[in-house]
Image (cartoon, rainbow, N blue to C red; front, side, top):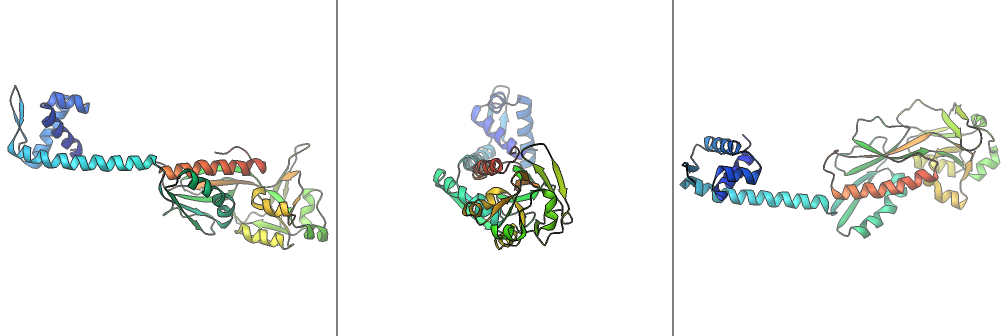
Length: 309
């Protein structure tokens, strides 16, 4: 039997004086109320009500049981209300897992806005280098991949776009700036190693002018699953790297990096938020995802992306 439903039926019969009245309160038929109470009595091995054709009255055991059951149900309802209230109130500790680059570019700038809007919220940011995150122990785990992710995780695609090619001015002065993607084969190319560890080609597409798509086979001089390492090599005049523009907004503004083949975009990227569950997201997680979506859409717009999800 449904023990909780049986307890509620018992209390309703006692408080409203009959099975029909209890059924109206609980939106159940009188036979259903009768069955629930009978199953409860059978499980307890005692009679809880005296039944006559005119009235229903508690037995001595029923009176004792009612006092305790009322207290138990009141505590349970209070606990339910407390948890339900917290599901709508933005408080508690938001635990975010992010790579160093995503933590710096996406998470850190939006945290002050979250704290200003929700003063009872606290944020823990766990920064690690990884390909696919282990979401256990976190409310949200962020990761970016080339193309689309097939990881088996419960993940929402937050945004997607295309990378741009960048290099240091000193490198381009020394090696010459390519005028067409085909000339990249003679350059030092720095390649991010994602889920597909054997893929070294860059696919470039023209933004302006006649549509054109070029697949460039690469023998990268540096290959890494750590974007920050590749950017450091590029900043040290080591070669050309493909990256989302907002990740290098500061060095581009300072002139430490410049665009290469600015009329072309490189491989597609997707940003995902992995979640521990699809259901019953805490309010703190929902507001973080909303803020994250806005920030990611700004990055996506500036880097020539498609729609956010």
